[in-house]
Amino acid sequence: MKIKFIAIAILLIIVCLGFVWTSQSDQDKNNITAVSAKEAADLIKMHSGNSEFVILDIRTPGEYNSGHLANSILIDFYSNTFADQLSQLDKEKAYLIYCRTGNRSSKSMEIFNKLKFQKIYHMASGIRGWAAQGFSVVK
Image (cartoon, rainbow, N blue to C red; front, side, top):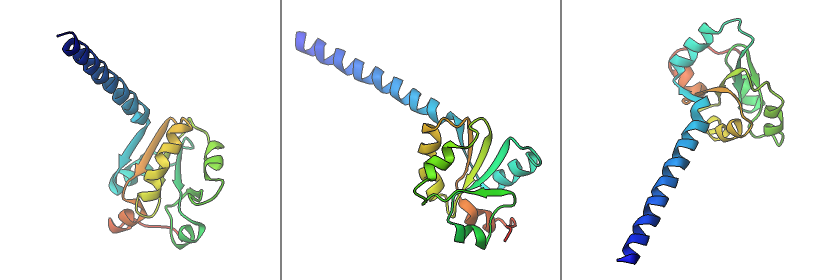
């Protein structure tokens, strides 16, 4: 009987800790919003001329030069200084992040969280999804 009580108590503690950990993880990710290409286009239109909204392309320079979103800035995900370059950005601004297909930008979300960026929009389908919707790019 005593062993059964201890086992139940331990199980309850584990469950409670699981809830605390999950809610903390969700809270950490509240600053990141996955958006479609259409939603990204709407954000860009809504924030036109707003210096507090930054479009960030994290592809390679070659990919960027082959076509990118207008007014975007480039920070190469594969650069050895990627995290250092991100750390120099104003973390209070809102950022729309994209890559080619959403893979690199998805991987970068952990870095944005760790650096405590306040608001990130992640274009989950990347520039391929953008182009597939018929939105234009700048070369």
